Length: 249
Image (cartoon, rainbow, N blue to C red; front, side, top):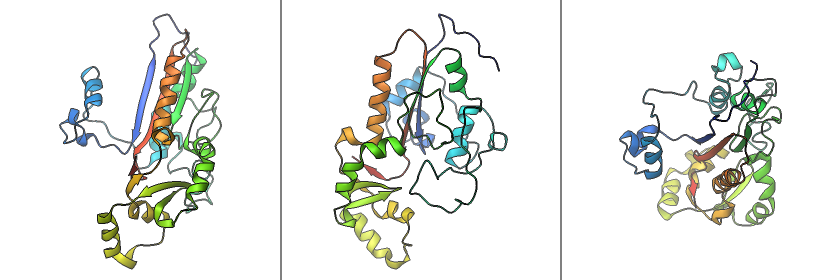
């Protein structure tokens, strides 16, 4: 539990993470989708073929990645919503939501204490304390939401059919004619909920690339790599896609 001092040969760590990406889709696992960059990384790395998530929920799985503990041991067993998705569903808001704190032992915290330059950019979904090991976080809420507030306010002036409300983010979307016809064919069986809007409005995201969340996550990761100093680093680059919202620029 006492951090070991770093040495001159301490390795740098870049942790690239994405959400809901199934391994059997990727060409490096024999899947049907050609993924040349991931294939190159796989060829130069160790490829696991028998790994699995500890739970089918986002927050507990992420906590397990950072702590090395099973959900029943680190205590987060359901998705945190109150702080991470302030305009999201409240089906369990009466419960006490406790995310990761500075008292929890995490990989980032241990490396930071040992002298590493540690950063986290992208989807978090573990909101408890503002972790001291992440001095400049960039996440969906509140960072991306605040940055894009003026853009999203303008989008909300459009017809409801032209944008998707994704946990309070107003995403301008063009839905193709085949999707619109399929939704119309289902009719009133669709419940008027936020989740079904994610399905009804699958389409093209009408934002400039530089305003897209995952692009901004990548840009910040690259900038951190370019300005690195003498200390070894641990940078987490956590992409939202291919998780919903089901829109692509």
